[in-house]
Image (cartoon, rainbow, N blue to C red):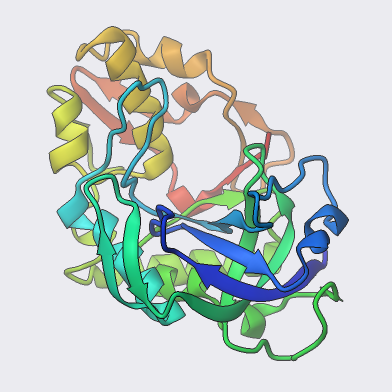
Length: 292
């Protein structure tokens, strides 16, 4: 499977970057329409678009879901650390953000770089490997490349995962060679449990005991996809987890486990709910989701 190389600039002023999302403006804005796949990138009025960093998932800094209000995961236990690390790695300094997470100023205003992408997700975000400076090899935008592990290691995706600042979260269209390398990287980071990493406080497998929504927003560090599902449930039905399995069964999450040939539907099949505690059974890196 190949990915398309696109050169351009990262721009964050007036946007809301987080640990796995950043805004990118291609040098040639017509290139978005040339990308393969059922879903198409939805550019803004200036031709730029939000990127979702492939293979990783950062703690949420502003998740709406069933809103009306945005909620977040613990900001001081990894959510802001991942965002700050991404922006610093790209080359931004003196970043100021408002209470709504929108960037009000940054130095410089734009940073050059490149992305490697196989297309867009259902929300119109470009799913990409994110690089800075010039790519190696330095070929023209629009070139289809077979992305190997050394190229992966040029990206922010690898950098954040190796530091344990984000969770591995894989989808079926991520090439297997890259997925296996990212899984091994995540395993090393989890074993190290660096103080600033999500793994230092993660309770996805040991058990997240939930009193109410504030348990998720202020105290507990869990896999972001699970956070999003449980946060929506709590806002709809309140703190009792009695009906959480049924809620998850009604969702559209579809995935493969440990190279199984047939997909499984519903997170309830891999989640244990015991009283007010939830646990994920398989390792996060052993789950491969089907992109909707």
